[in-house]
Length: 236
Ligand code: TYD
Image (cartoon, rainbow, N blue to C red; front, side):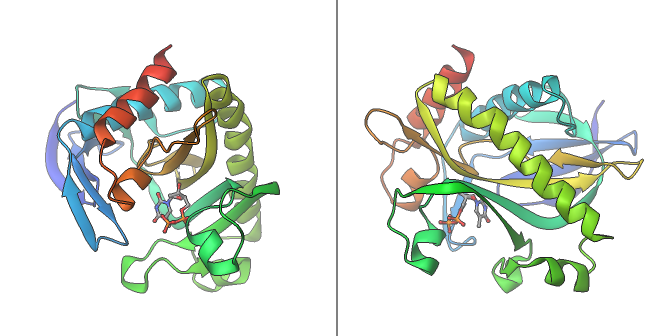
């Protein structure tokens, strides 16, 4: 399968059409952005690392019965996946309070939440990805029916129940992460996008050190080494 026309260029990936309308190719870029694109940089090799990490995590989730768009990794930076209708909701899953949650609700950083929090953000950069409740999602026609919102929450919790213990075994706390979903050609909701340290937060169990994009958000550096560390733990 080969790239034909560029369909879309996002902050961290280019999405390409292929000869078959049922399949797309994601090209993982080295670009790093934060603060809704205000802070920008690039880290050579980051795209290839995220492609490898996402490939491993999609395979793991597929094996555990989570439907995803993943078909196969093509080469260092490219992944072949199903084409689907994107649901414009970012599903945020949180086990430990940090980032925007600590700022908006004044919860102390590092507080272990009494249960896993699942939130919806509107995937709209111009509006700054505002928080959504179920009624907003229905009014904006982001989903067809309340059942689809329930399904997003159910899948998000199931994914967390797989990934949280998986990373704990590897010495990392899965603090929070962002998921995106789409509808495949049969209308089934499947996991899309990527799963990488760009959209997950990982804290070392012993030291509390961040192994994710927070290093970039906080201007700490060592991004590539941190992402390599996550990949090596996954492969171990
Ligand atoms: P959050 O604390 O809401 O955002 P911020 O990065 O502004 O502190 O992030 C929660 C998790 O979701 C975190 O792992 C990063 C991820 N995320 C994204 O990948 N993209 C996004 O647009 C947002 C808002 C979060």
